Length: 176
Image 1: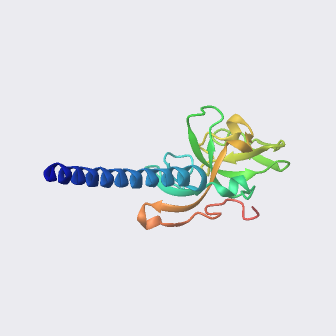
Image 2: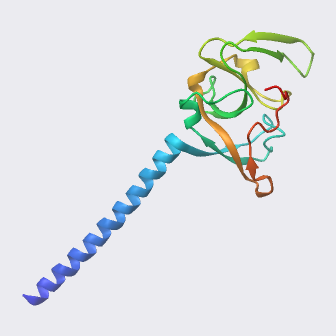
Image 3: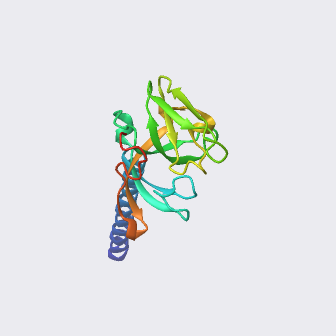
């Protein structure tokens, strides 16, 4: 009887420890999910669209989500926006105009200097890449619904030599 009881105590101890460790890992992943979904996320920008702010080969940056919910994004901010053309794609673009703003843009910068002016409709924003010669943005698909903005980027974390704030960096128009 004593051996069986000892084995039962050891078995109970092992099961309890396994359950505690599993619960700890579960809590960690829940906290990670909540943080990534509702507070802050790490994003990767690659390609020519946001040159010179982000490199061709890819930069990692942090994007916080609370500013979007509280309406605290504005012209000059770099935002994560879900593509209106391909909902599976999230893009990093510079926000240039909020609803009721008048935005003047070069229609086809590669071939002409022709400019157009648009008033951003209610509930929409105007986004453009910093590299106007090679960016798919509001000049192609028009104003973007505000609800497609997923975050405001605030800190570049990779490459290490470029670590730092993204607050209003690389802006072309100092009045923004």
